Length: 324
Image (tube, rainbow, N blue to C red; front, side, top):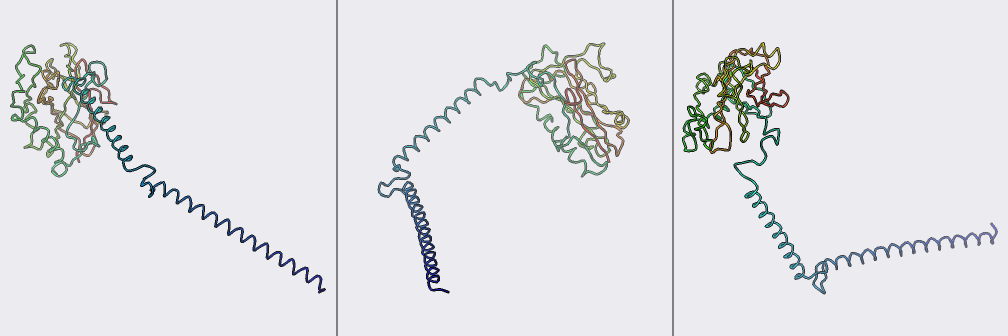
């Protein structure tokens, strides 16, 4: 290779190495500058958190922070006290514990009572299923009935808050007092000594009207009693019937016995939050259910101002029975 060409190649190589070296130096300088700037920002932030020269936290002295905390604690205490006082005055002045403000025809609930049934130890299902002759299967149901009836024992209704309304005329009854419920009216067959009929495959079901303040049942005329009540009609009672919901249920439900036969005595109404008030009960005994078949039962209460609707339990209640 000629000497001139060789010298030219060496010069170009030296220039390339110089450019690379300068580029590396510039990159290091940039990196070094970035790290220096980051360190400076961190120092500034830490100094804002705690300034040792002025002994300040976030640019405030301890005394300044104490004043702010005391101010906000006092503010929240005043707000809480005001809210508590306003709520207490609202409960004391506006809310009457014995007399609801919404009643009459203001709401659907106040106009149309519904039925409730027991036993219902599991509130997630309306199916009453047990095996005849096996106590383990029906004890939860009979025990639930027993727990409810314990509240109706005579010694639970002995205080001066109760009166005997059985033979009292409507005009003579003190409606501020609660009427005693005679548990014997639930019949001789539906008792704990007989496991409320479950051991025999003849289950007893408790029915009661839900309490609605100041509601009173309107009696039927002697000529317009519902045919469903048969010969169990009485102007002094709210009638009760239970039936199979569908034709197949009606074939399998069998005969029923009601105690009291006429239904709920009217003298228990109106409910006005009387001390010790016990809602009247009706016991329904299913005398001959078809075993091994789920029976849909629809029970209704009967008065002139009670309406029935099978889809929302208006004036009625739905449950299922299955005896294995």
